[in-house]
Amino acid sequence: MNIFVGNLPFSASETDLRGLFAEYGDIESVAIITDRDTGRSRGFGFVELAADARSNDAIRDLDGTSIDGRAIKVNQAKPRS
Image (cartoon, rainbow, N blue to C red; front, side):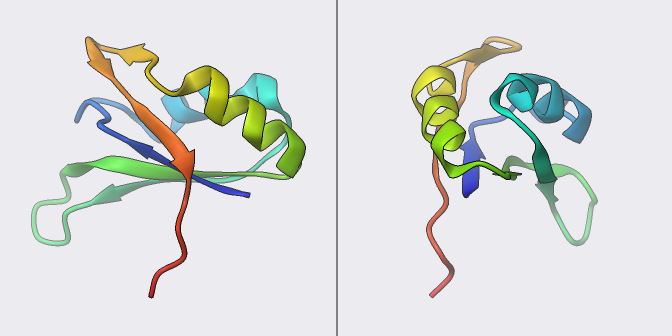
């Protein structure tokens, strides 16, 4: 399952997201979306976990978690339309 992680502090790294989601199983991919022109984080990213069942646990447990004073939003990523 692909998980959307929003309201990230601009200082958050892919390593930070890996650490946050590590207890929920094997992580297939992590990406923090950056601005094409500046290379700066846009404040959101995606984490893909191998086990869908644990993905729901991660969404439930991590939504609202504070990272550097910002409450992150965690939910199932919606496919691009």
